[in-house]
Image (cartoon, rainbow, N blue to C red; front, side, top):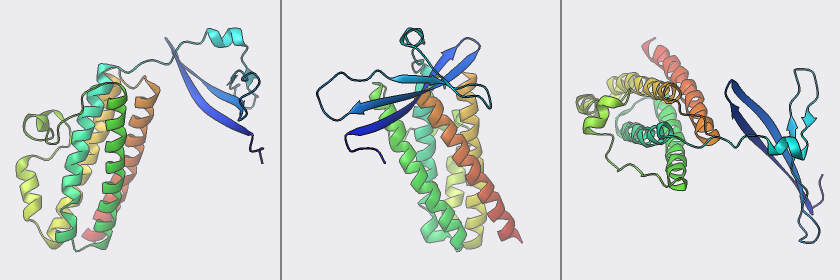
Length: 227
């Protein structure tokens, strides 16, 4: 184990270039004591498969481009995805009083937990960059038409009225489509030139992966309930 007076900080720095991006591992050793000079960061450029990496010299480090900043596409993605997640929470809030499936209740709880956490992350992302937070009801009215997978007021009312097995089937159907809409929004982000900023790219990829997994789980549950 490392001494209590030392810690290792490992970060990833993505350097965007015209034809692609190079990923470097940054390893910095620092001492908890205030005296003495602070060690310069060691940036390691990974080698080809099967080969070791190479530590870049300070001169080479100085030539690395700064990570790209966020764009308007990133901001709109975060603002719209917050509203998209809010409607998913509206849907999961209906499960306790209407579902008769333990499995539906469990997956709804997973969705609720993950999307509440992601809303907080997106709000912090916007706040840190001085961007406007969406209002609490911006997932209604005209916004429904521009966000893939969003339930219309009529579909939401249909879900509210359903009970028992009918509710479970309808919930899964609507939530799968809702999640698929989120995946479309991730594709739209990159198509619009967003997702170059490391933080927005990482978040979009996590949303894509998590909701893809949940879609598969819900489809499997649909098949079990139908059988």
